[in-house]
Image (cartoon, rainbow, N blue to C red):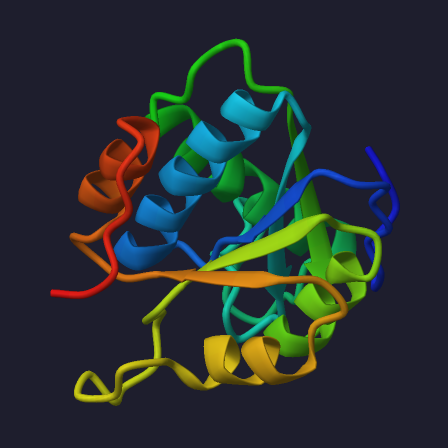
Amino acid sequence: MDQVREVVQVDGGVVVGHDGSKCAQEALRWAARLARRADVGLHVVRAWSMTTAPQPSSWQPGYVPPLTDWEQAVRDELTAHVAAAGLDPAVRVTCHVVHRAPVQGLLGAAEGASLLVVGARGRGGFAGLLLGSVSDQLVHHAACPVTVVRTGAGGRDFAAAEAGSAVVGE
């Protein structure tokens, strides 16, 4: 098993942030279609802390598992989300698990990326906002272009782009 990482370094391609939410799953599908079309790699990044990670199988009351067990639980969950997305098998997918706050983890990965893709809303509690706090920070601070995918909009917008037309607004 790989060591616990605090930084992901990529060399080109599309980076997509994934937090396990429905919006992140749609962003993953959108990013995978773009990566396939551009023939570039897709890097799926899950930044986590012990409070946002799934419980490792070794967890028991009164026992705190080693950090590598937490990372493996996050990696297993991320792998399951990627498998459930039903991505085109031609897409070159690499999953990265980063023990860091989401903004810092994704900003680090974006330094070498051609594009960063995130969902508009993740696991936060302010459903009325157009952007979540993570996507808002990434739009303002990422070293590469950022695409924010809204729930329900990804398929329609991408299909229109593939057909040669542009969707400008609603």
